[in-house]
Length: 129
Image (tube, rainbow, N blue to C red; front, side):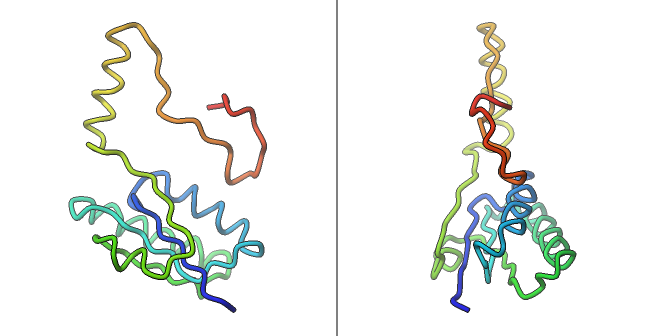
């Protein structure tokens, strides 16, 4: 089998398990051999927790052969990657809070992001939350 590495920049995100679930569901179409989770050093504890959860999710589905690695620099993480996914927030949660307060100040209801139901594979309306 050819190596298929996916690097996830922002791998310590609470959204990563949902992403991993989607990768697991599509393993036959996308036979991943390595998942490289990348985050900032200050997110070490979170990315280590997410990596451990990822390993448990893979094991539960009989995919222990998929390697999971944690990185704090891009060079090694993206080297040899077939795909590089980004899910980062500049300024982290403090920036999110500021963004949300700004909308409220002007009586606007903002949406953090728009995403399809990746795990279920549904083709929902892009306006769905």
